[in-house]
Image (cartoon, rainbow, N blue to C red; front, side):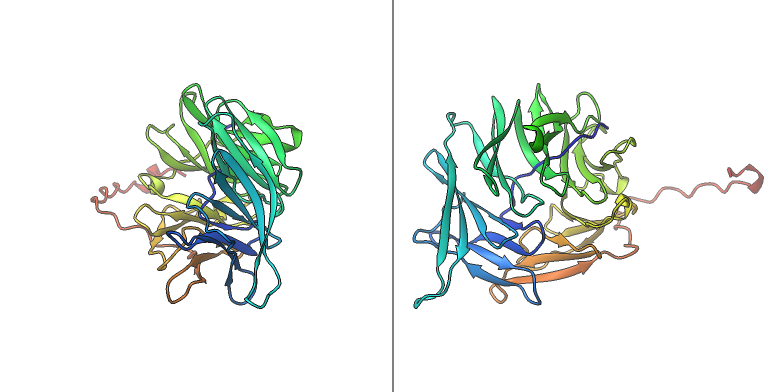
Length: 353
């Protein structure tokens, strides 16, 4: 495995700021959609609606920043507009929403897909990905001058940050019929380096990365079928594909931070295909499966101490967070296939040391 930089993924409907202090989502439905900011720092979470004069379209995207503002991406005809939303002081008819326009992108080709990247680790910057078969452009849309910061040959998707400074970005690039994760150095004009090269013809995608431990979560068909695997950034050891993750259709959404130089001990949370949650460590040989809380918003955040915080919204609790702790030794999953025959005992004098 060659390691050089980072990767990116499509922004989830509920996004959490890099430091875990705020979150944002597009609330409501039908003709009454509006951005909503959640405050997660403090004894109890609470939500603040950020409606404007017109309701938002269903394809609008929101991103929470560490300063409490919410970035919104709207499509207006062929133009993609970006703005910052924030609550203003209360008035006679209640709090209002302030809006700061940032800029817009109008692609020349209708085949260009534009989406927000996950929150930058520095908590201030925000970036968007404009991808087409002709090439991919990374735009900085907040936290710095509005404009292009990288141009990459090929169609890129995904999105994972590899460092805490918000400089190294990993993207899954489709080129010549295969998809490989590449690292993009935003501090050097978008210089591109190979990140994953598991097999020559395999599709190797980066799903998540933890800058503290270097843990990488990967999906690749190099083993003969698409499988989840893990590796370590900068390590010469090959990517490993645990048997307990074989056939697992889950998608990792959170990695435990703060485990410097200990990637095997990092807790990993998986969003399972049937709607449940899987908890796993690379050092374990099994996945601990449990049901998701009612109204779960599909994502979460690990604390350095190993507590997984899951946001949810129900009619009774429109803004709630519940916590889970990864057990020290999770029980193995239930197996429906018959267990293999017990190995024949080896005489002591023939046993390997």
